[in-house]
Length: 73
Image 1: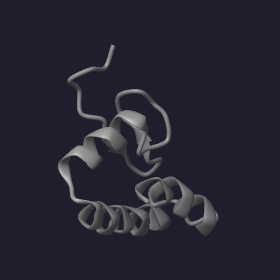
Image 2: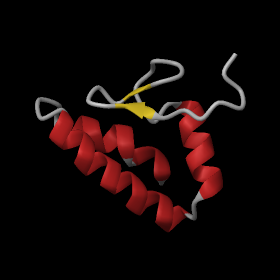
Image 3: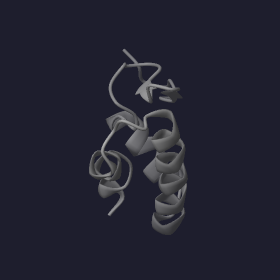
Image 4: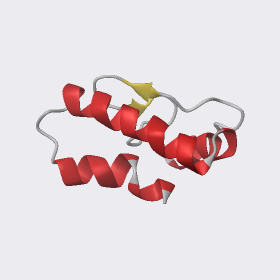
């Protein structure tokens, strides 16, 4: 059970430290959505996308976009 535990990314894999799924996992998305305005969330996630792209240069840009930004719309 991971309720009440903050779901954060482990770098350089960007998998969740709690549940091991690709971050932002569903619990992280819920936490982030709750704590940020829509615009603030998009800017924050863009920054995370840029950091993840540095850590995972082999990952397609479209995959990173889908993972970090698409869900914020």
